[in-house]
Amino acid sequence: MQDGLGRTIDYLRISITDRCNLRCKYCMPEEGVPWRDMKEILTYEEIETFCRIGAELGISKIKVTGGEPLVRKGCPGLIRKLKEIPGIREVTMTTNGVLLEEYLDDLCHAGLDAVNISLDTLCPEVYESLTGRPYLFKVQKGLEAALSQGLKVKVNVVLQEGINDGEWKNLTELAKDAPLDVRFIELMPIGYGKRGKGIAGDEILKKLTQDFGPLKEDVEIHGNGPARYVRIPGYKGSVGFISAMHVKFCDSCNRLRLTSTGEIKPCLCYGESFPIRELLRTGDLEGVREILKEAILKKPAEHCFTELEKITETKRMTEIGG
Image (tube, rainbow, N blue to C red; front, top):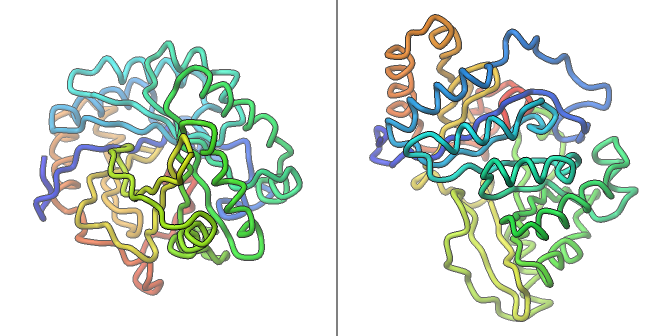
């Protein structure tokens, strides 16, 4: 289905929980935040029903997110069910990687197509300072296990000035001997992200060019997102940049978000959402279909992250979904 501006909307990001086993400083405070009662969270059956309706309207790619999706019991079973929906071509997941090794076999057997692992540092001390937990070794084991299983892997990195901005090279080198993508994502001013100062993608690209010389653009399709990629000579993987703060890609945006509490979000930047939980629970599937159509048609032309006064979203990322 196309939105009001003629963009094809075929990609859905689904948050299945607001809970997480880390306390990343740009996401939530160390003491955590109040979790939603499970009665407010969509059941797996409700998520599956919604995705079936979405598939009928042209959704073909799904990303399972959180919070941290693997803290919710039965996540691999949901992925299996989503893979079975006619019209769904790809189901992927974003995770912090802490529980990935533990659940990897189940995820692969369920048919997971790819995994994005959030990893902002390779220094144990910095990792614990950023996340509030000493789990770097678990993430590294999960990353290694995913690669050994032949799963497509992307490493998502958010650099912040004065915290981990000096680690761009070490993180880039993850792509040297492994066929994975390292993606530098600019910090977005949502929730606690407003307190930090991110690093522009072009700054990192400039540093890479200074170290490695002219880099070749990688024109292969790497997934569903707006990242642009380059290849470093001799590296097995690629380096990508998602520069929402400095390079708008809204004219080709193809996504919607579904929060764990059942709200469709057409754009991360704005507070407008379209609730479908009660419609699902009363069995009004035609009502769900009409709300989904409306959310697609009303998708904004572009975000306003560079104009903070225009941002109307007040929720934290844990409430919205990664």
